[in-house]
Length: 383
Ligand code: SF4
Ligand code: SF4
Image (cartoon, rainbow, N blue to C red; front, top):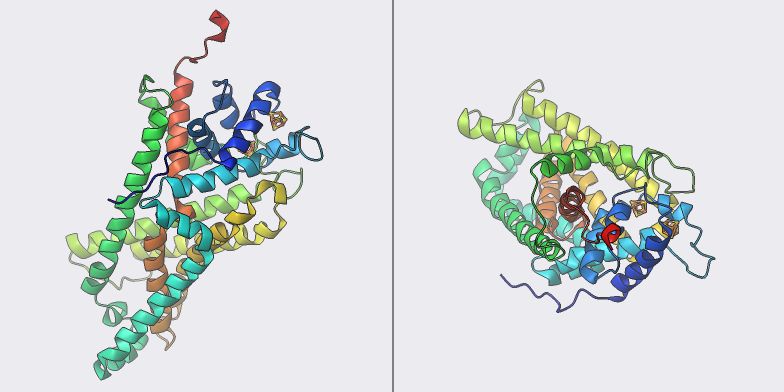
């Protein structure tokens, strides 16, 4: 597996975050806001590796920026959320497999998302056109009888999507392994406690640290709201429901020999429709919040990465719902192809797009919970 990892994680972004952490470690005013601060307090200096750990604990809630007496125009010019966002972006590229693809996505995220989506639509349409008159007949039949698999046979779907999905899973497993190796280098002797795994799952599912210590995200101004947390949860829950819908449909197909299409009251349809609706509303809401987010909270160079990812999820959910809603009209085949193309683009870009923030954040939270369950290595009270 080709993986070109630079010799050092040290960059201007990690150096700036280390400077900020050094000041925060003296101040500690924000220590109740999130996991970053208790993790910071277990350190006296900040290596690039420890910064890549702390940065992925940050949920960019903005609370520490609005609370900070050292934020601009103070001479210290502390912008902790932005400093952490810059380092997270480097994590996504540095630990990607291969990492040159991670870098490419960072520079051209929106173009790659749109380009792969349009490219797959063109390839699918060309394939149908090249197949000749038989396809045109099937297309017509499919649009009037809800026969999705007449347009793209099930085995063809498995042959196309299977390898791309397996590649994405393999690439993310290797990326996660590299990041975990780096975490283990922070404290090789750290003991494992089983309850940390359930604590970590609970932290992830609740988005525990996206609430600025309980008040919500101070995203637009210093007035916190729950909007970002709720919209993020809608996307997360919607995604999980859609995943469950596909998994149940696969079991029906292979174990019960019951192929799609399924009735509207079937479990795959109910899961898929509720998940799709949640994703459409959640993604649209997240995108609508972006222009009003305070500039000090964002890394401007990460905007295309974020927008490209959320937009692709929105297209997947919207075309999935629309192709089902319009399943007996002439619009269905094209909507269905756009839906398939967007899912294929998502699988292809999954290891490089913003989707990986869940992977690194989950591992960082797990490491954090392990750290907190162990005695501090500083042992300052014994000094
Ligand atoms: S962000 Fe500012 S107020 Fe908060 S701990 Fe750091 S220096 Fe102190
Ligand atoms: S932005 Fe929020 S999550 Fe990130 S360090 Fe500040 S308080 Fe913690």
